[in-house]
Length: 250
Ligand code: 4H7
Image 1 (cartoon, protein in one colour):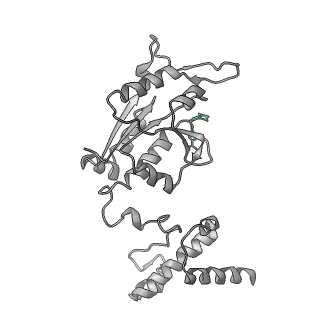
Image 2 (cartoon, rainbow, N blue to C red; image 1 turned 30 degrees about the horizontal axis):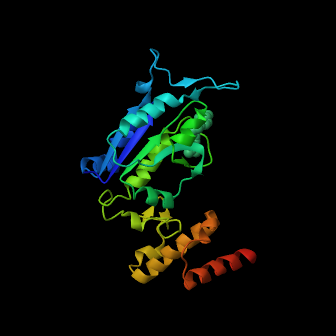
Image 3 (cartoon, protein in one colour; image 1 turned 180 degrees about the vertical axis):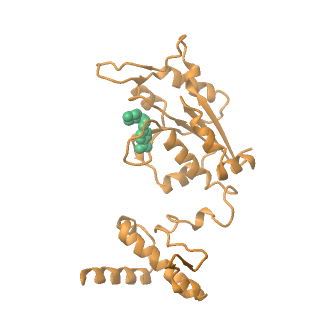
């Protein structure tokens, strides 16, 4: 049995085909570690035009997703489920998605994603079907499909066996609370642009120190907010005080 099953409810299942059949996510399926089931909830509409949306009560423009097709789709998908999974609604009004949330979701064996288009969902879907509303960032998209793929991707790579040992999830940015240090590969000089000498020195301790300082400097410059919660050593703090001092004396 797969470690985790993702059910996706969308009007545009084809948006998921490329994503699910590429690279690491494809391999995770092939290894039987993850299972994905994408359903077009239009098939649960009951009229001959397969209507899933309607005009809003109270007037105004735009269309609203009707409750019935989504409630019926969820009932159908969960008819044999022993336990109700978290039912996630992707929306700009949701709680911000973070690495911590990805780790929490990766602890479940089943997740369900509701992806909407149009102006939005009938509020009864939010209140009586959805267990969590999530936003992947402060911007507006035409639908919830890309956010669902973002979440499926970030959760899948946390499932044991999905990543190779080399790019294991414990190794990356955010697991240490800092941004990543710069990476270089051969050649040591390309169009006059050189690789920092220290990385060519072969001196392991110095290279590690350089990488740590580069991570700290990058985080300090680009995302100082992350420094408040990152686990820092006394040596890290000393380096950050040096950066502050250097800035003040500029
Ligand atoms: C729910 C409600 C997620 C979903 C409204 C979804 C950004 C994010 C959507 C809407 C999303 C995110 C419908 C509001 C289209 C905007 C033009 C789908 N956008 N939409 N309107 N940040 N859009 O996670």
